[in-house]
Image (tube, rainbow, N blue to C red; front, top):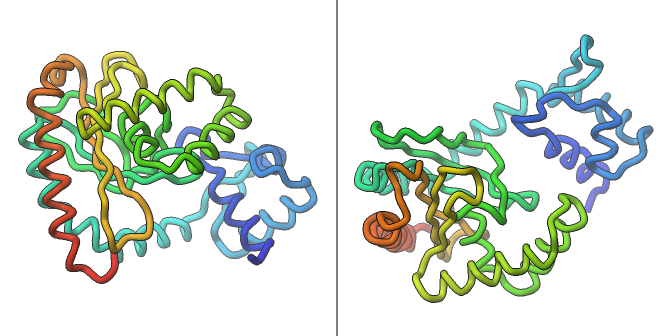
Length: 252
């Protein structure tokens, strides 16, 4: 491990769509680093183009160079191109937003999104971070985790994000029970009132991390009974098709 590199990447990872501007003090708090260290790191990242300094707010935002990394990453991710036709068919048949996501920084990171034209729900955005405990995708991820990984997730969400440990452990237990019984996990109004979700983990032997496939929509279009009777079977069938199609790839 090169500590300076790890710290620099931690600073970049602190930015979110809902908090695009962060000061040195904000970054020091987010990363648990001394202000002096953060000042040196932000100065370097500005010089390299990964951060930009906003003089009006005396804070930093991500620079355009970060976008070039994102573009290069998405272009080289074979999983997205392989899964794209399956995602579109699933979106059209389920009348929902369909997404691929993975766990990053103790939240679910959206990797790709496909939507049906008739879906009224607000679409998810590629690169957005979603909660682990209130979303179907997060619950599906935790349901397929080892006990050790779940323990690390619980410890972080309790200590860093103010979650209540007994309630969080109950969410995970319920997600494991639902996944064991049905083969998928759901979220009914838990992330946001009126928003429904269902998700399954993808078991891709050639990929070094777990990916989750999810469908989401509003309750008027995706009521609970429709999720269990129509959407979830489509989701599970699509996950099996993606797993089978990906099995011959040497890497993603």
